[in-house]
Length: 341
Ligand SMILES: *Cc1c(COP(=O)(O)O)cnc(C)c1O
Image (cartoon, rainbow, N blue to C red; front, side, top):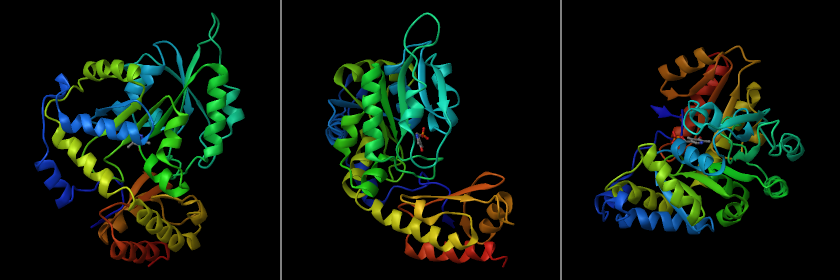
């Protein structure tokens, strides 16, 4: 099976498993796991921040981050397709008491003026905006990369209004590779970031919240409150550390493979190949005779797994466990389906 459903489906490589087996560990709730501590320092330094906090999932990292910058009853702004308000099962409201308001999702760049018009000051009449969140790269937005100039505009806006800026950077690595922007430059623009080791980087588990020492100290408490205090978790941190050393620069290969898929499928009018810049290939089936259910079922029969997100919306992702031969096979199967074969 060639599994293009998600970049989360990767299995730890033999090298990664060896690093996990060899990891030095301690009780991380006591702050005594040297492998976790080293990973937190390494990731904080990559983004030019003071410190970081290891979490089991990206959702927990996001939720800790937004709770750090938005008090209960106050507001977070993000886009309507953000992971934060789509795939985290209402956690910002249910756990953080946070009110969210969204701007219409755009698959490419966002308009800073649209966001600016939404910011509400503190006062007695309206809920106060306390933070703005963006997603880099954008998952439902087809792996789109927000240009640095847009992020700089959002930073100025946040400073003007005294609100925080959070980055859901589950795939920020892909943005850094696609746009050649150093991670430290991205880091410098945000008050908090969440970054994920178990997507394109290929670790089995693990994300981090990146921020100031003061915030992360509070974040440690929030993590414990959510049941995220972990013990000899260096075995997992070792996988993340290995992934950063060995799997970061190879993301460019995933981008090339995604572009190849997109170029092969573009003649069927279902994807704009020029917009595919990272490892996500969104398929708009609204004008195709093949709907999502049929695509998913027939592709599966022929050995290719695709993610069907709606009757007319599907998605392919490239990752560590799909090589050039896998892409060749996927192109053959998928073009065959759209050509009516
Ligand atoms: C995957 C993902 C997350 C985190 O997901 P978990 O499954 O909780 O690790 C957060 N944000 C985005 C954009 C993602 O794609």
